[in-house]
Image 1 (cartoon, rainbow, N blue to C red):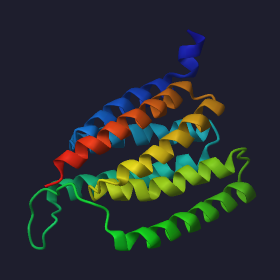
Image 2 (cartoon, rainbow, N blue to C red):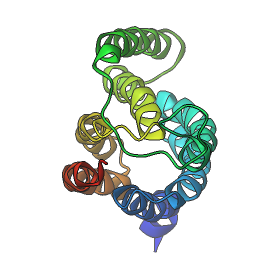
Image 3 (tube, helix red, strand yellow):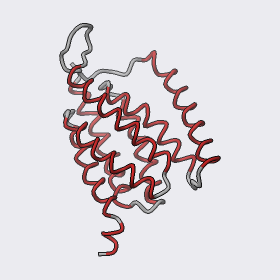
Image 4 (cartoon, rainbow, N blue to C red):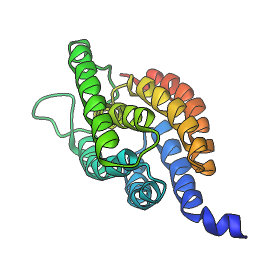
Length: 192
């Protein structure tokens, strides 16, 4: 019972995270509502565990869930058309600029964690945060390749969360890796 009371927030965010990834796999707009709840609770969880970059990232995720919901419902691949957004490929012209942004954000977050927090995992925490910034943006735009970003994030996050004694979320991220692989192939079939 003590274990459950110690890890209740981990368990609740894990259940929400499972629902989130299943809605994402199905390309369902419900993913955004579940994600909003998960991220609001994640702010508390990550702060308590000293994962300050992840905690800060949750605020960005909250804003992106609103944007992603709007984009999926009202956005369009065509100018002046309010039809729902379709799954598509990540534009090649954005790859190098976004890789540069990831590297710069990773460095900035790393330096903040090293100089202004007591984080004992600044490299991994800043890496997953920097990559997630692009991942959620790519998801909001329904880019197929967003799954590759999440696979990298999920592998590192799984190890990081086991290390930080967040076992349920760590296990969820291990499952995320598997679902992301299947999600990529499912979304690939859905490209018009």
